Length: 140
Image (cartoon, rainbow, N blue to C red):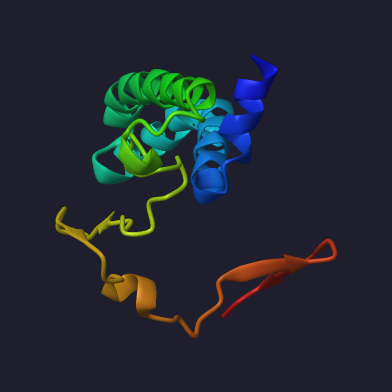
């Protein structure tokens, strides 16, 4: 048994692939819970707070179970090249791999946009009031 395990681990041709599968499985198993707050946040940004708390929460719980289960599967089966060439089962590969996803915000007319609104780029030269070190300063 130990000899078989050493042979599987020591095979030079696919040692990198096996180690990557083991690392990917470990990371997904340990960080699967992050899917819950991530999905709540994403759904809140895309829709609204109610959707975030309902659909985001349920989607997050579902993805938590899927990602954690897939991580456990990859940990247990890391020496076996299944799927072919140790390919990732989930996309994105890790919970934090969503670089192509862009955060959108709603403009004043309710439409979603990736561009900043005019009011967010406009700078006001008038200061209403501010406080520094316990001293209140009023503007004109």
